[in-house]
Image 1 (spheres, helix red, strand yellow):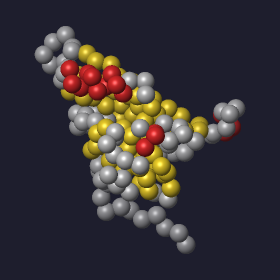
Image 2 (cartoon, rainbow, N blue to C red; image 1 turned 120 degrees about the vertical axis):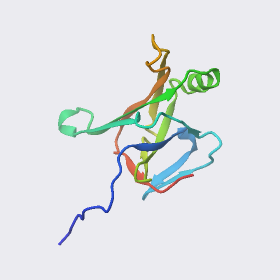
Image 3 (spheres, rainbow, N blue to C red; image 1 turned 180 degrees about the vertical axis):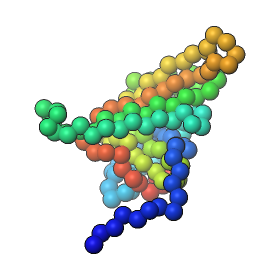
Length: 154
């Protein structure tokens, strides 16, 4: 008999997000993300509670090209600043493998070296003091694999 047991604890949300250029990804196999280096990896700070991860499995019966998984990761970076703007502009319209550390301190890879996610962002200052001032960014794309549970790659 196989059993799926109740976990001792389970915390939702995301704690950290990394954008990994696909050229650095050597492999993602058996729960291990192997990188050729980490100097170009970007750790993105976001306001706690704003990270939203949407994934969907599109079965081959609904897609003429075959089944796939859609990924959309969004979050908010507070306070507009020139150094943040420069980094985000460098990332804009480029592709990355997104690595998320969730509330259970488990790492998940979204995307692969051959099917990375595209980065985009927008900024706003709001029209009044209580409104958000900062950047909303998105990493999104289609892959043939779902998010993969991996060991800490850093």
